Length: 119
Figure (spheres, rainbow, N blue to C red):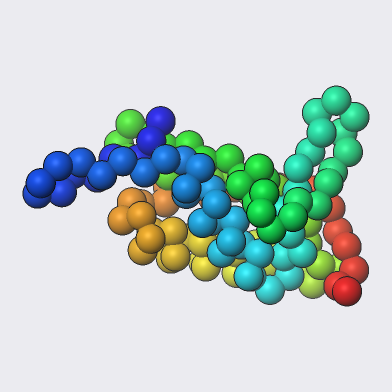
């Protein structure tokens, strides 16, 4: 389902891929996030995604009342507290995505798929 905003002159429809791409670009700027992860269901392998395919590590759902739920699959930096990374990610994404879309974030789920040393 796409996000819908009623303006005075008509409707604005936001595709979930747009929200996923924007949320992914915000996420990789957060401290402690190495990148987005793609999980292969067939073998259970985790792969670090390149910057041009960030939306594949994010699932976006929009409810009937036009609220966004985001699921992030991330790879985090070794040696940084996961709770600190998660709090930073939630605060940044919530603020920036709400400002970008004009829609409310209902929930942000973070799934840590791997840990890597900072290069």
